Each structure stands twice: as C-alpha cells, then as structure tokens.
Amino acid sequence: MAQHVKGEFDLSRANWQQAVGEKGSRGSVEVAFVDDLIGVRNSAEPDGPVLVFTQSEWVAFVEGAKDDEFDLD
Image (cartoon, rainbow, N blue to C red; front, side, top):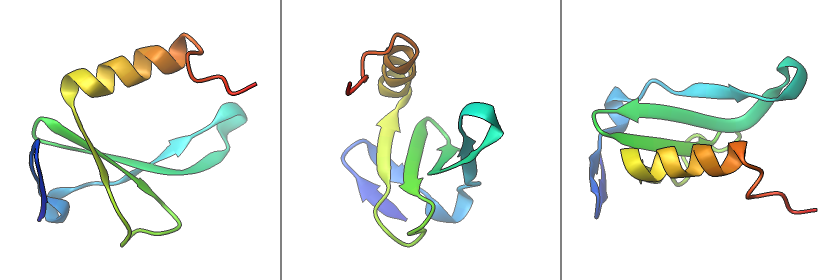
C-alpha cells in the first residue's frame, strides 16, 4: 500500500485504466479509483510514483481540463 497524507491508496486493489486521447489514441497516463481516492501514474513506469487525488481535487482537475485552464500554448 502507498501511504499518503490523504489516506492509504491500496495499489493491490487498483484497476488501472489507460487514458484515451483525441481520435481514440492511447495516452501514457493511467487512472485508478480506489475507495474515495484517485491514483494517476505514467503507464511507461507502472512501478513509479503514483499521484493521489481526493474526489474534490479530481473533480476540480477534470473541470479545469474541460475549461482549457491547463492550455500551455
């Protein structure tokens, strides 16, 4: 288990799903929902670090992405 200040993210129970990008292309980001936490990792490094989000943080991130708040251009 990965201990996190937000709680324990149980990696053994994570069902990783690879993100699908524009036009159906596979991304290099995987997401897993375990209890009330969301884990995000790089699919190229499955044993690497996992970012852990609470439900409210995840919703804020997704809404920001939909509103192009993260456009780097």
